[in-house]
Image 1 (cartoon, rainbow, N blue to C red):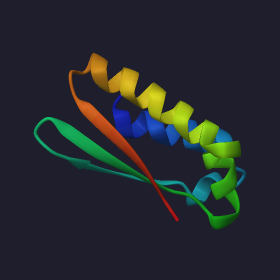
Image 2: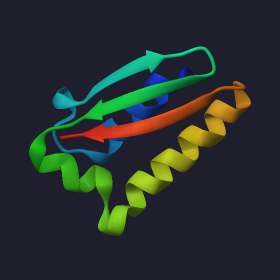
Image 3: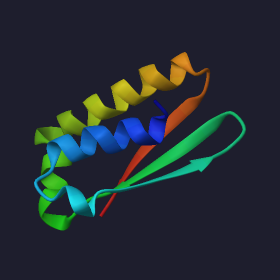
Image 4: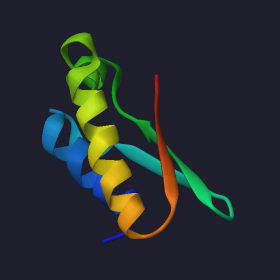
Length: 78
């Protein structure tokens, strides 16, 4: 499973309106930036209380990217 699909899977499991989940990956040589867009009303569900859900998603993404010998950064975009 690629990193983009992993983030998309996690985001679709969290939100109510899964049709508005958009994931875009910007790849570099050693790292990639993964941008996540969700519907405005689902933004709180993805971020979580005090950012705990977003931090957990970033931790999972970091572990998966380490396995692929890459570095990945998750950006949640309004």
